[in-house]
Structure formats: C-alpha cells, structure tokens
Length: 276
Image (cartoon, rainbow, N blue to C red; front, side, top):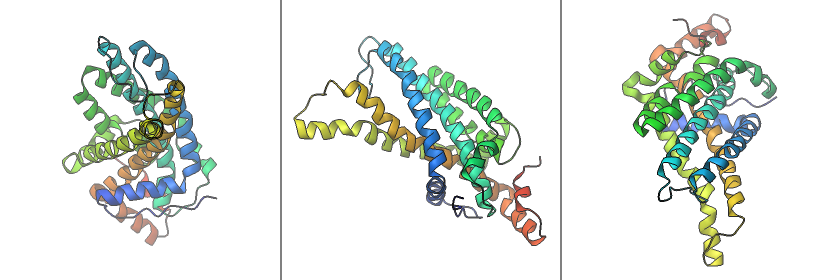
C-alpha cells in the first residue's frame, strides 16, 4: 500500500501548492510516471511524421523557411495532445489526491477505477480537441482554453460532477482567474524544465565534441523529449488535482465540511462530492 501524501487542509500560496503537487507525485510516482511515459511516448510517435512534413530538425524543431504553415499545424497538434495527456494524468492524480486530503488509504491499482476512465477519456479527447483548435486559431485562444477548462479532470474525479467544463471554468475563474494563472505558471515552469531536459543534451554534446549534431540525433531527440515530458506531464496533472481541492477549500469551505464530517463521525470523503 502506498504512503499517503500530506496535503494541507487549508488555502495555500502558489509555492505551497506546487510543493503539494510534487509531494503527491512522489507518493504516487509509479502509476503517474508509468502512465505519463506511455502517453508521452505515443505523443512522440504521432508527432514524428508531422515533423517530417514540416521539415523541422531536432532538437527544438523550429520552423524552416517556407514551411511555417506546416510547422504551425505541428505545434497546434502538440498543444492538443498535451491537453489530452494532462487531462488523463490529472484524473489519475485526482483519484489519489481526494483520499489523501481526508486521510484515507488507497492502493495504486485502485486509482484506475477511481479515476472514472470512460468519462475521463471522453473528456480528455474533447479538451485536447479544444486546445488544438484554439492553438491553431491563435495562441491567445489556447491560453484561455488551457487555463479555464483544464480542471475538468478534477471535477470528474473529485467533485463526481461529470465532465462539466462549466464547473471547471468557474473554479479556475475564482479569485481573479487564480486557477488560470496558476495553471499557466505551472505550465511555463515545467516548459523550461522540458526544454532543458529535451534539448540540453545538444549543448553538452557540443561542449565535448566541438559542435555538429550526430546522425543519431533524429531518434535521440524524441527519446529525450519523451523522458522530459514524462516528468512534466505527471507533475502538471498533480498540480490540477491539488488546485481543484485548494480552490474548493479557499472558495467553498471544503476544509470546514471535512472537519464537520470528522467531528460527527461521518465519512469525510462524502464532503468531497460537489452538491450544486
């Protein structure tokens, strides 16, 4: 049985929220990282032919002259796939975060059923499509699509409210769009880590060899990005799960409801279910 992470039953600062997300990731590293690795690997498999069509080169895959349209399609597809993956991992993380908040033990293998896989999969496809279309139509649209609707995974698993994008947007909008800015801050933080891990090996190779990419860079780069994205996607999924709980504590009094349930000898997990 996995050790339960210690999630604070109180409002948190941004730094505390990110720390809590990493605590959750460390406690549930096996299911989260294993799932993230599979999904990140499939993402690279999908993007490889699109990169060939856009005629981009490893490791950063920047646009080439005369191929900006194809490159933009590649980037938009990447944003869409990311939205799908983070939604799935957010649901898996939420399946662990809810019980952790109320001090209940859940085995790793039980997370797969608690994440409501069918609803999660359908919702993730919808969210990924929205993110991809918004990115293709203009990057500003992706910012709000990703920021507003990304908490839908926690809504499904923790709130048990079904795939409610409206509920997710309301949670993310509270406190002056606090949820939106938190998701974007986490995304940018992990984007920097991903770039370092996914492309930093080129700088190291140049340092020791004197420059020039080796022939094997075309397949080494996707592997490097898979490994980098594995950690980043899992961490972002944990951020979403913790953010749903923290927002409900901050704006709905979830901490009070849990404390009352405990004082009455009732199951505190009942307080997690959202009642409109």
